Amino acid sequence: MTPGGSTGDSNRHDSRSHPGTLKFLPEEFYEPFLSQSAKEKKPSPIRGLLHLESRPNVISLLAGKPNPTLFPITNVDISVKSPTDPSKESVLQISGSDLDEALQYGPTAGHPGLLKWLTGLQEHAHGRKAGEGWRINVGSGSQDVLYKAFVALVNDGDPVLIESPAYAGFISVLPTLHSEVIEVPTDANGIKASSLREILDNWPSSKPKPKILYTVPYGCNPTGMTATVERRREVLALAKEHNFLILEDDPYYYLYYGAMPRPPSYFTLETELSEVGRVLRFDSFSKIISSGIRIGFVSGPTKILDAVNLHTETSNLQVSSLTQVMTYTLLRSWGYDAFITHTEAVSEFYRKKCDVFEQAMVRQLGGLTSWTTPVSGMFFWFKLLLNSPDSPNAVTEDSETIIRTKALENGVLALPGTVFLPGGGKTAYVRASFSLLEAEGVEEALRRLKEVILEARAVSTCNKD
Image (cartoon, rainbow, N blue to C red):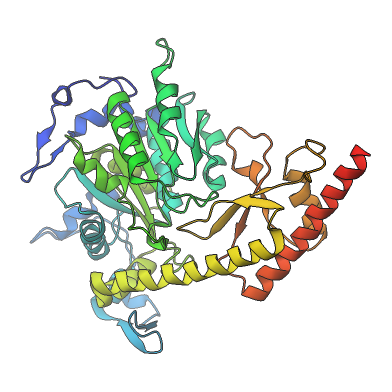
């Protein structure tokens, strides 16, 4: 069976039973999904053996690790806010053997304690247990492991399904992979599963189908959309039917503030299928703990994560041991319940920011823009209505010049929607972030943007006359 084809009977993949109720795909299933680059990578002759140092009675002469007695750092103290009472602080100390690990080379996949904690988090948050054919790699932010996963899966010329509009940071990666981008449209409810089915059902028989679909399902950057559970189930069904993997890039999962219960992740929902193993999930602590600490992680099939590891071994060796130990020390002190309490406070903060921004949108840009209110994340995606009602079609519905030139000249900086279209093109949409500005700054920024839109409308009316 090749990726991108119909799977038919799930037993064709020789799914193996989990001791519980799940079946998971065997490692050999993923072999056709791996890129030639991933297949050609060889384990590091040193890092590939580091795990053997932990064997009982082994005396290691293996690695050229510096002697820790020469490290000048003798203690690290971290002052942290209480998740339940931010006015209170406690001091966490990293010393002794923990400090030795923080200052030394460590395992490529991640600090063992942190990996164990994160594995427990995925069970706590997504109902996924260890031993179901998946594990975790830590990365220098989720984009690090996301890029490495793409390198491990995509050959030159391979078609890649990507939601559109899409995260601009991901779009910039695609040209380096020389992949063929297949855009799948989205709306306020997520990926249009009907459009995805149409693409796949009408795929040329002479051409291999896409192996992967990339999506940001919560608080999508840029659109702010959060995919409904119905859409997610439809996409998962298509992933099995047409045999592709879902790359679930989810840095805004814990920034959900909608009135309805949070939809379950793809990682959770795939347990409803007869087998699991088609979802690679990418998480990040950038939005909920610290962006500068650069800790993200990927959860997915062992075979693919092994290929990601091989990439890391030949590039940056590992994520900083110090930031991993700092993060683990914090998370270990909190536990899962306090961590969730913290994320709930974070999501409530952004809900209030969102409300402030939308209220200012109504006051300043009502009738001049249109939008759908986000329920997660930190972005507003709104459409400029550049033509006044009495001047239809007088001005091209495109935000590029207005935002890059006129708005900037008037002292407000945002992003035109075209940078989020994988294939380029014109769009009247704009992305604005509401994460940092206070109410006064939001009001002034939108007031300045209002002036620019009104000026464009005035030009439209003059052109008509």
